[in-house]
View 1 (cartoon, rainbow, N blue to C red):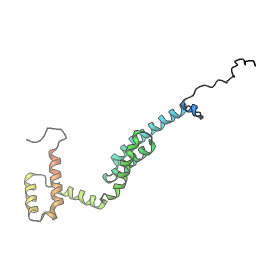
View 2 (cartoon, rainbow, N blue to C red):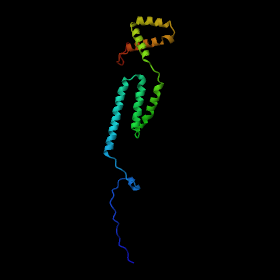
View 3 (cartoon, rainbow, N blue to C red):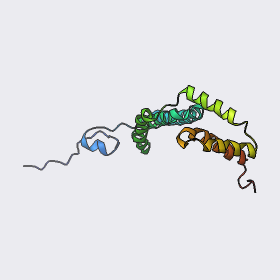
View 4 (cartoon, rainbow, N blue to C red):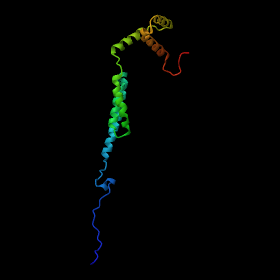
Length: 168
């Protein structure tokens, strides 16, 4: 018997794509377009959040948690696989807390602003002392709103907006 000559089997050349190729499935290379698309989505989400935060300045204080919760929830849902997904839970909590905030109807706001205008007539210190003496005759539970408005007006008059520049 004669020995067979050593012959190599011709094997077609296959480029090594990645570790997944060893196990039989080829890994698809990520296209540049998908990265660009992700970048555009994230930039759009950021610009949307900035726009919604500007909108929140114009919204009444009762609806501010609703806007903030919507922004957090949308951000958490759009960026699920990133660290930003941690803002999803606070967003949902803010959305669920909005119905628990007591409403302030427009009639109450109009009445309070009218009362503030009427109390602004008492401008001098002597007039404010006379008004305080009149309010002392009545129980605190009836005059608490008037005292609150007067205290707010007094602190508003003393605050000039410049830190450290108060009355001495």
